Amino acid sequence: MISPGAVDQVFVTLKDWIVFHTPAPLQTLVSIVIEVATIIVVFAALFALATVFERKGLGRMQNRYGPNRVGPFGVFQPIADAVKSLTKEDVVPRAADHVVHYLAPLVLVGVVFLTYAVLPVGRNMTAVNLDAGVLYFFAVGAATELAIFMAGWSSHNKYSLLGAMRAIAQMVSYEIPLILSSVAVIMIAGTLSTVKIVELQARYSNGLAHWYVFTPWGLAGFILFMIAATAETNRSPFDLPEGESEIISGYFIEYSGFKFALFFLAEYLEMFAVSGLGITLFLGGWSSPVSFLAWIPSWLWFFGKLLALLFAFIWVRGTVPRLRMDQLMNFAWKFMLPMTLVTILSAGIWHFLTVAVVGPKPLGGVIRWLVCALVIFVPYITLARVLERGRRIEKRVYRFAE
Image (tube, rainbow, N blue to C red; front, side, top):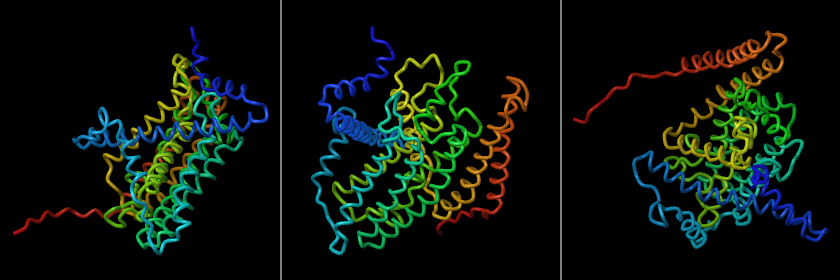
């Protein structure tokens, strides 16, 4: 009988077996190639499935059919899309900078793939275990803005350049609350290592895991993190860089064929990557929420959480309308930024408000939970009312044609 531990480590064991039967001088190279190839194949396949899930899901939400012609239930639609992208004509504007125009989508996809190196997708399943893994993720991910500017500037099109500048302004604005919402976790964990952050959450008390999302500051930080992640990946309702009614298709308007497909791929890969980081920081990474389900393979837990967040992205896209540019920026600087600072304050209070100060267990833990929740809830209500007071909502007047 195969033990749950063997199933959990089956991919690690298979990789070690392949490396062991490789000549010693090539073992390091073979190990790197296996890890890189696995990341590319797995997440590229997940991208193909996600396109079907999203189109089918949006179709259900909008009371229509999604893809249903290619293969059973339309599951082969990604293959048809890939063939079309590969065979479609590649049109490049005559005045464009051909070298930069060609490199932009490659740089974007390459940079996004690099962020997966520090994500622990399972127990002992991290490509590179860096002591500063979270810092590496944000540092490498910031290079996507350079690739977007390359695409907008090299196309020699005013709409493309405008879309690129709007995308960069949006990404910079929401990157600040994205990073600050992660600071609370780093403070509590005391490390920047993604592997150690998951290990700290993979402990259990009374059968319940120590996920940071189960704390007031962790829940608030997770919500703020995912909102900022939605804007960072240009997903609806923050997809203003691709506002068709204003600037057509944004920074990739002059891209066609496979280059356009690479931008499409990079958007989904970035969504997977930032969701994976959110899972690592707040949802316990590869760990189970309760101890009696710990027998389920760790990589199944990670990808199950990833699919759940993917569904949340699709759900939001199908239900929430697109924001205006002024609403987008005001929300980032006047609400998201102050709330992330409040979350950091709540995390600090959670750390220093020990049981010895507030009383014995379980009363001490309840008091600490309530105090930290109030520290977040009161500023939230106050800030929301102040911002709502500044809005001028006029009475709607209905007029009929005569």
